[in-house]
Amino acid sequence: MYRCCIFDLDGTLLNTIHALTFTTNQVLKRLSLPELTEDQMKYCVGDGYKMQMRRSLLAAGDRELVHFEESLPIYMEEFAKYCMYQVAPYDGIPDLLKFLKEKNVNTAVFSNKPHPMAVENIEGIFGKGYFDLIEGQKPEVPKKPDPTGVFLIMEKLQVKPEECLYFGDTNTDMRTGKAAGVDTVGVLWGFRKREELEEFHPKYLISSPLEICQAFEEKA
Image (tube, rainbow, N blue to C red; front, top):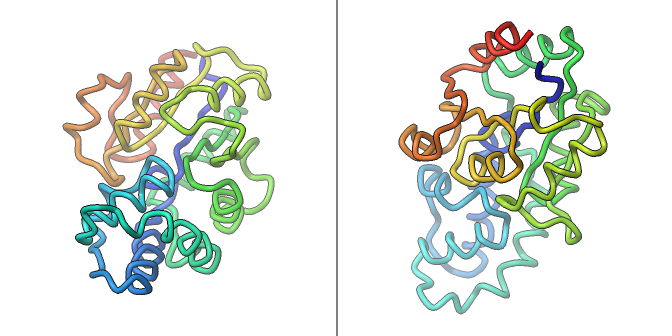
């Protein structure tokens, strides 16, 4: 029986693309580079803010990445101001979380977003203490797809891999879950396309959050 659900944040629990795009464009403007669209940003994010800025600079025309090192502190400065910009939960997510609480299922967040901003996003939308655990990117924990963060969450919540579901919207998430030995749930409402998720053969592939509820009946 599943006793724990671990969620990616961006593109899975919360639609943060407006905040990510707005923040990145603030950086690009300060560097006198052209702004990116939200569709472009969906393929820049997901692997930590450093990789996000690397991809964004390349997309904006900085082919030699001459602004890369300069961009990083600017991004963190701007993101501290705008990480909640137009952030909202996806339709059905609050209902899914309510269902999980009623089933006494632990809930955790594992994100490549810097930890302080991950906490601000989650607590700003759902309230403090709503999730059992929030793990954003920290220097001492390798970022996804390294499964170390998933192992730490399972250890803290005292659950086994076969008792966990890992939810995400990108190949990074699918690789993370598989590396940790947990069942993966590919979500189709996020930042990437079905084909990207299908390539990694998730246990479940869902179009709306409440579709996963059936899995709890199957394993009951």
